[in-house]
Image 1 (cartoon, rainbow, N blue to C red):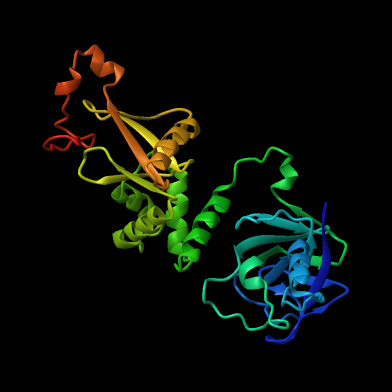
Image 2: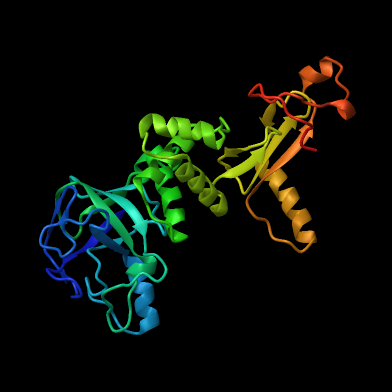
Length: 321
């Protein structure tokens, strides 16, 4: 069972925080009396007690509670918290994980004897429900309450993971990007193109333009969170892979597309081929072409299979060979 070991605040920034007998958490604000009270996202800073102890062993001296500018010290949490997860403290307080650490190069205003853990190992959270927290209170992650078999992550949690990945590449977290990502996740498996995605985005926020949607897709592609592929239509479609390598099988005659089962096993085979060549696997979509059963029943020869009309009804020349 995880538990709170320290609640700390400071009235001014660039000063060490001091341990308190209790903390009064206010929804959407932070901890009363703390210098970060009222911030939008980084309302609460948290360090795992295990990470502090490891740093103490390396440093050769101890870190008093609050000396590393943390509001909370919690013992027994998993090694990694996922942005979007909810951390329940005591009888009523609920915090949502906003992000881990800070962007590379982002300044940190305070250190203790040359040490600062928050920029790399700390977490920043927002207060979703207020109340009082005292040292010794139980700390429960929302995912832990579902038992040993974790339930599917919520849409918001997955969107937060995507936003965090972009932030680590130096990209800003914006509500426009959040909406684009959430709609992309909602349409998982539909293989939308950029225009179709934009139509759905603009149905909720008409101010978001095509350039913003397309740039977001490109950034997600660079992180490996979204894969693009071509069905011979003259434009890319996008998919959210569950593995490093995602497999599509396409009918060369009618354009019908499906997914190959047991991707993990197939991925290991391809990885072994790549390692033999001295290369390293990168996220990608692997397309395999063939003839579906319906086209075979129609007698379409594989060597002559050609699709002259896209699934959108547009004419085009040749096929993606």
